[in-house]
Amino acid sequence: DIQMTQSPSSLSASVGDRVTITCRASQGIRNDLGWYQQKPGKAPKRLIYAASSLQSGVPSRFSGSGSGTEFTLTIGSLQPEDFATYYCLQYSSYPYTFGQGTKLEI
Amino acid sequence: QVQLVQSGAEVKESGASVKVSCKASGYTFTRNYIHWVRQAPGQGLEWMGVVNPTGGSTSYAQRFQGRITMTRETSTSTVYMELSSLRSEDTAIYYCARETEPERWFDPWGQGTLVTVSS
Image 1 (cartoon, each protein chain N blue to C red):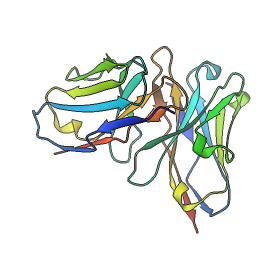
Image 2: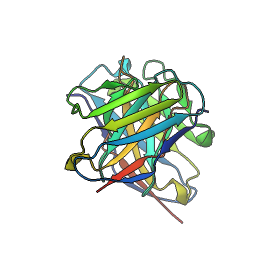
Image 3: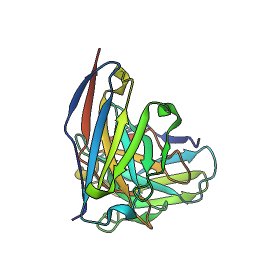
């Protein structure tokens, strides 16, 4: 199975800050990686697919990069609505696997 | 619009089984795989498995092998996830999600079904 190691597990930041979250795959997954945002009591929401393709309607302050085993999600200038938990998901092969999550707190 | 609607919350005793349904609408049911993901209280997301609505083939996470069954009913555009031999650690919200093409991400998600296992 492919293990996804996500870091940090939590992150404190302020409105306007730039933050980066990292996911590392235990083996190469090309660019078969997505990023999701989850707010308390809600189902996850898609942000990015294929490592760097932004979902239509997602603010441009979100960006993704990486290929192979190292991936990053960057939020360029934090807004109040961005404080949530973020997950990466590899879909290169079954079983799909999520990262452990990063809780972004004010 | 495309949506997945799940069955309601369940309370089960340890050792019992639970069957959660996920009814799809707004698209051609057989065109997209349906995945199941769970989230224990205060924990992260865990992928459980996937079912192909066209032929019914499945793939499950190893840790659930032997006690999970995913099925589909094309006449009602519904997917089912049954988990047996429940234990307290299975207490979680269970989500179904459609895998889109070509993006291959999960959208939409069902609203989630809380399964509580009491000992």
